[in-house]
Image (tube, rainbow, N blue to C red; front, side, top):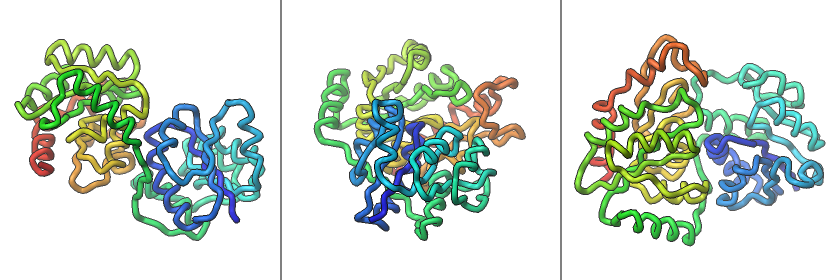
Length: 329
């Protein structure tokens, strides 16, 4: 029986993008022992994935011993020096990773025993992850997300929504104003204009945020629109909230990736990142992306005043969102 170690430590959106590769691996090796090593926050998400035999959390007591307990094949989907080192630390006889030109930190390839051939830049990250399995003789193109949310969490989130005035007959529209990178955050004045243009009796708008900095941005929007803030904080609750929604409008963040995994309608706002690589993959979904000479740059700070996001108008976004809602009832 084969033993596999999947290495995808973070971020949450990238973990979601690795799930189809896990699904294909499990399908082709139904009796294999498959472990996944991730950071603590990633475990909250992976708890919803049936078929993983063990979730190892980095820096928890005994984690180094756990990754060495079985003779494994290690698959490094992260592509960083630290993830390559973990592959080596596991003692895996076969350590598989991407070509050094497809790695964020090319030195990570020094830890691999096998490397995939170079892939084109325009390939979606999910397809890129599936390609890594070709080193195991697996050829899969289908995107499958084995996520199962317990009814208990869904019901708890529904109760919290009721307390802030949500009625099931209305369409829950989530505006995810936050993002980890400053360069991924659309401007508060544009969110305000979008929400005002989207106002409908049958809609229930909600502002989603993450950390305190994002909370301040959401508060600016709330002050001008009276749209309530989502009272959710855990990864599990946010996923349940998204699953309940009719539409998500979001930048390139975990919320967007989760909605795509649940096949829920999304409108993506892309600035420094490439929607062909990171964006929605359902043909019905839409993205706003300004094709400037400097974009996509993948930078976390911008010397030009975020022209890529400035070019995206509230009118354009509202038109796409309303069309999406009409198409999907």
